[in-house]
Length: 120
Image (tube, rainbow, N blue to C red; front, side, top):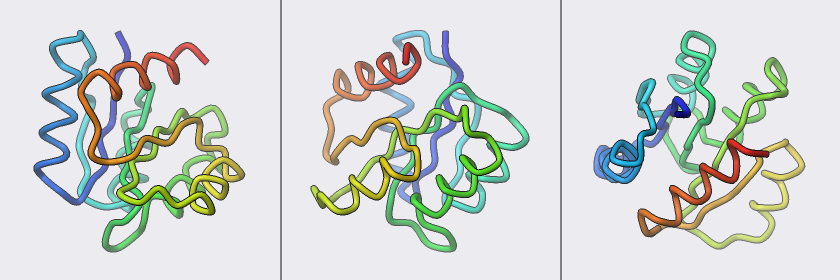
């Protein structure tokens, strides 16, 4: 099953994502609490999918996605956003982000989204 990197400044959200995915057979490759840690961990771990928050300290999700995708265009990123901001979603797509999911999410939504990203 797919290896997942979770990048979110909220320990609660990281735990929720982990609790949703592990019973489905997904392996959590690592966790980061900001975009810069996420970039560094991606380079080291090369997970199948990154589940990343948009708004974080140090480096936000869009900037981290931009950096990862410029070096690794095959990277599959699922962005989590608290706001249903259409401009943000458009910008994420233009950067190369595969999918966007709005918080709060149901476990089934994140599982289905990751399965969709993995198979794309």
